Image (tube, helix red, strand yellow):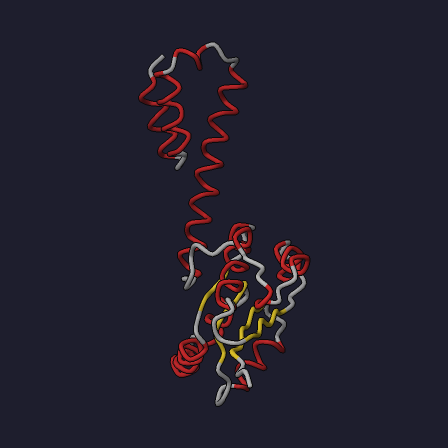
Length: 195
């Protein structure tokens, strides 16, 4: 059988990972011992894993998380953080995203609000949800520019994922309230002053 036309068809169908896996199967004598269904299953698995990894990579790139390596599994729970493991585990289910709820993380500077928020956003990406990291000042500047150039609705549409931004509230409270009022899935962190 001629393999080149089959390889070309796989590439034309954009099944590149399957084509690579099939080429590797052709080189392996051990694979030839497997039944057709098993070999086909391995090829489909290779394509699925490739596509899942590519989608996750795209979601994480678009999220632009400040702490891209933050993950829920690595969150520390020292007493000064006052984090409840059960609450973090419940948040890691991403049910809050599905229910269009918001999360507010508060605490003094340096306790890890950004880490927790980025970990939750990264976990949401791993679950297939989109996320976006923006500091409040940058987000509000983007929203102001979007209102001026007519792309406000499109930018607001991007904010439907797990949104995380550092908020130092002063002049943009109305936009923040609008975001929350529309029931977008939002993570907000506040720095509070310790007396």
